[in-house]
Image 1 (cartoon, rainbow, N blue to C red):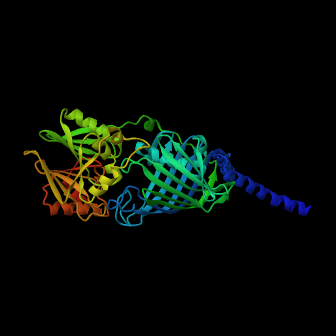
Image 2 (image 1 turned 120 degrees about the horizontal axis):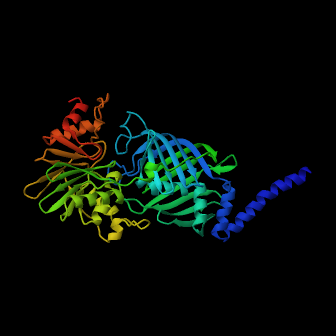
Length: 483
């Protein structure tokens, strides 16, 4: 009896190997995917929640254009994947691992950032405490992360009629999630997803390559899941996570808040001087400047949706004048995500000398998965630049563009000065606190740096028009740096 039991034990893996060999000898993609689903225990999986720690990188927030994304310490991270409802929830705590570069994290050594971000269907949102804020820019990326997870990519490939090819001992299944991403998954002879190579749209980079690697699979309540996840986007690392815990079929409870479902891009125009408007109403602001025979816009942020709303408001405020220039404060993706939209409208893009070659390269990339305004227009972006300082004038109004030197936030960092009106337009160097907020105990190094640049250029500033937050008198900046 013991011998028979032993033979039965040996027979089962042998049969599994035989089935795997048959599938890899040329069975169709569906057979390979069903084998992978069985090997990973995915048949009854409706939700997965995994958690761990490691490192992350601030995608799109490089200190200098073309550099790697700034590294962060990911002290905790959890992701809930709801395959049944097409939903996702991420919770993270992170700190800076290097001093330079962008992102919303506190400066090096001054604290951590905690975030909660969600997606369901075609809606994405972030939580500030318990208050949801729509994040339409993030929909594509969160859908990508859900359906390129180890079990998600198998489900998505089955749904989207994947094709099959061989790569050594691995089977490679390829498919497209229309309008969202294209992906190929490498499935080993053991039926485990080893790697996913995908292409997703991005408002700055266009079609953006992504590589996600899965390794160290373990059994968690009958489901096999990797204990290490590594990901690159746009050629640089964005995630290296050690997974410690996996929960199968945990309750999801991800429902789209009514405020998110009803959210639209809103532009609130405030006239701050004759021929100058502050265009707010969202997380990122723009400034419209009327010249004799054309318009200048400072900042076209985020993505087509926001940028098109801002451009429409500019046409409403000043009908009949061409938008000739759009000045970009810096290359970080949240501030440059609408440049393709501005180029589609025929505007010349004004960047720093440092950023110009990089912008010329990336703005020439196609955005074929989800064609944006530039792709649909058939135009090519025209880019000019600023080396130190540059003046735009129509003989009456003067618009000066100058570098913010020695910032830890970005190189090629521009601000705009309107000398007659004594208005300074800047992004991220200073974001005003809420009205009547107390002066921070620790002085912000970015604020100090902005004051140093104002004084270096001998600017007699009256008010600051920040590209985040509210218009404030310059005294608020000086009070915050104890001046």
